[in-house]
Structures are given as structure tokens and as C-alpha cells.
Image (tube, rainbow, N blue to C red; front, side, top):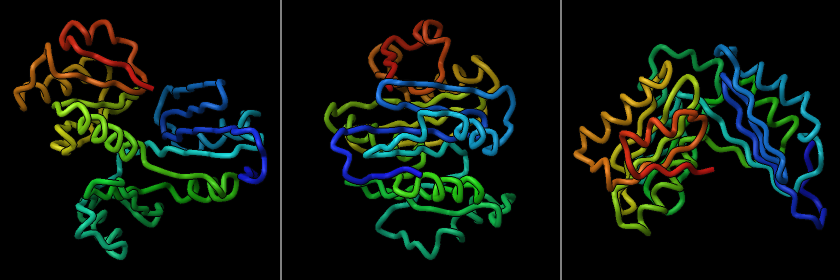
Length: 233
């Protein structure tokens, strides 16, 4: 069990749980394990249990949930009691009895991200990391993108890439213009969706910056189409 107590050394742990992979960063130690197939969160939990770095005492523990089942809504009209209704409306084919629905508030902006977390994974986190800060991956990306574009006063494209899907956010001067996830099956799909965003919104392929997170082994090829590509942690 993780503790947040009186350890004077500022040690931190960041974990990403996904159905197709598991990764963590602990005081300079990094590991990223991608699964060959979308085997589910049980695989992620099993890998987590086998990693000795997980079970030291950390001052802060941050956990990212990487799952496609999420919805954005203006915070001004959001009510927590409506979470399930909103998710059922947007995902009518999902059995939400298997999920816990949680809201993420994007501080400083009128946006709430509602996401579903697998019940077994949710219980696993509460048991082993009870003091962790839990957020959806898209919440963190959108928040960072909005703050960055507000300072730059530019249009920017941000994306997170895995071996099964890509999440893309288009921001401009601190405003969210687009946010969506797409299933992908290799490099051609990733290039297609990023290119479609640039084309649809008439963005400059030489001037508009593209910020890339996650697994992207084909950065060189991506730069052949988009000049201003920035890989971020």
C-alpha cells in the first residue's frame, strides 16, 4: 500500500493503465510495456503487481486511465448526478454495470471530462494506491494543451498515440476547438487522422505546431508531412 506520510524525500510515481499497455515513471526509472493484443486491464494490473518499483513509499502518486470511453461537457451545466445518463446517451452499447463513472474538472476552463473506469481496475487502485490522484489521459492532455495555447496565442494540435488508438485535441488561444479519439491500426491511420485535422481546419502544415505524446516510432515520417512536430513527455 502506498503512503503519503512524513517521508522528507520528495519521491513521486506516475502510472498509466491501459487495456493494451502499462507504463510508469518512478524517480528516473521508466518502463513502457505494450501488449500485442487488447487483452484488457487485468493484464495491466498483473504487470503492475510484478513491478518492485510500485511498492516503495512515494509522496505523490499520479495515475492516468487510458480508455476511449469519455465525454466532455461544459462545467457550467454539469451535475455529477447526470454522469451515468450522459455516458449512456453517448455510448448506448456499453454495459456501464462493469464501470465506475468519474468526472475530471479541467481547472481554469469551463470543461468537465466524464470517463468510465473498469470496476476491477478501480477497486485495484483504491486498494493498492488509496492516496493516488486519478485522472483520465485525455483530461491531462487537454489541460496542458489549453494552458500552452493560451500562452502562445496560437492554434496547436496535440495528440496522444498508442498502438490501438489516437486522441487528438485542437486548441487555439486557450480555447478547445476539437477533441476526439480514433481507433488506429498502424502508421497510415495515424497519419490519416492527423492530416485530416490539418486539412479540415485549414491549418498550416509548416507553421501550426503538432505536439505528440505516447508511442510514435514513426516521428521522422510524420515530420515529412508536418514540419513543426514536437515530442513531449
